[in-house]
Length: 127
Image (cartoon, rainbow, N blue to C red):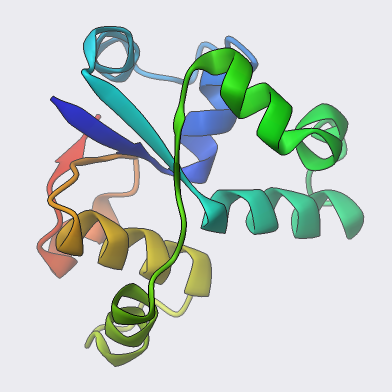
């Protein structure tokens, strides 16, 4: 199975944080491929810069190196995904989440996330 990590799941994996569910941890360990979106790179960098993620220095400064070390695959944002994210109905306004949902939908990738709000968009979610 291939997976796409939501940004918080990615951080919790890298930091070996107990908030990552056991099912999510097992799925990541046993996945054929784990994808990380370029969306997560910008989200972490922005939130680190503005002080919302003060402990994310290594991720913000060395994102690509950390992802390679973890063996994760890069998932850039396509025009189709960006367009879908902008057009999706729903009240959820977070642009990072909307892009991740669109990527999960268009690439048939279950999204590893604790965000139950994602379920209303029809993306497969694993937690």
